[in-house]
Length: 470
Image (tube, rainbow, N blue to C red; front, side, top):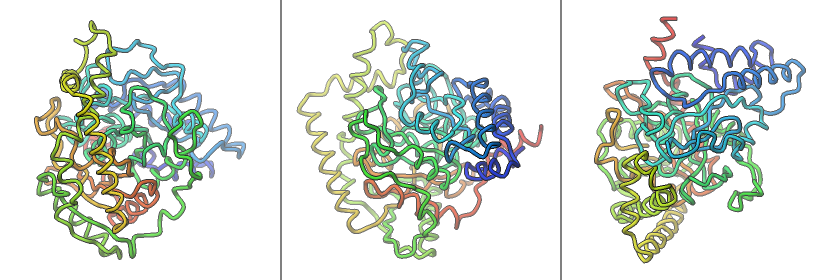
């Protein structure tokens, strides 16, 4: 059973094609794993067992006829509860929305995944409206880290990261407005990509304007590429969606890194980083160097210093929180996360002039980082500056936007997290790879080269213990 749940999307499709595995058999195994582990970890808000088995049976019939409908036919995919999914309500981790909210609608990425044959089987937990980097919400309570259930699983794509690490599904849809894919990927020991802005189309009204992105999460970089290929398509109703040619992100994925110009900084010059994380990230950079990359070891990344040490990077979040709370009936405010209310209060005090200053600062940062990538192909650094804190709660130093990840949302660049080691406590550490805007394939290529050289990454001890006991 462990081997079955460990299989990648690509391996599943090969097994379906060879008729050595049925999508129904795999879906039942996933649902059994959810039944065993979700009561302890709380990764899913809702699971549609009946619908998932019906869709898996339809996939099985297509494979038996030799007529799969797409490259993900029969692959189980969970969807974060910030992304509309037909047949299951979307509540954004909040108690303020009606029970059937958006239950009759598929977001563009979900429709595209269904077209590729994916079996959409459940909604994963999120912090309320994706507002913070730890893993609890008023609606679903605490989501727990499978490496140590007393610790945070990271947010806001909390359940997505946990579900993948705990083998409760093969692929997961996450969203990222400041690190919400990459941080839970790092803390759960899985892979996640925040694509270039609007490489994946969206229509979600509760996400944060030009900061938020929908992206793939998986246990391997190859699966990220396969999933992104299905999701990254033009969408006429989304006027900002990427209008370039459709790209196969699996093509060229294994070209390696020889000759690539890699900038590496353990801190970006903006935050103190846990020594264990620094050591793991440095080892990863040395491995890229051994693979033929031309690594430049930087103390700082100059354009980021002033920006990340100012309030400018948080102002858009403050303004968005204020708008969100203002449009929520006042009698429901008592049901909201106090962190959102605190951000909204900061937003209420903002002047129009201050907001325009923030927008101007963001444009200047984007221009400066565009110029930076004229000299480097990718920038590599840790995904987060510290190991996961105890759950629940939000430590004071995590009330700011995550310093190593959030600026990529401001500049709309692709950024991925891939596991790069374990701490002394046995907790996973994430390596972040950032590329120029619309060079998502290059980011995945670097991650893939590192992943292959690194070797297999273990499952959480909790998963192994549960499997041994069954």
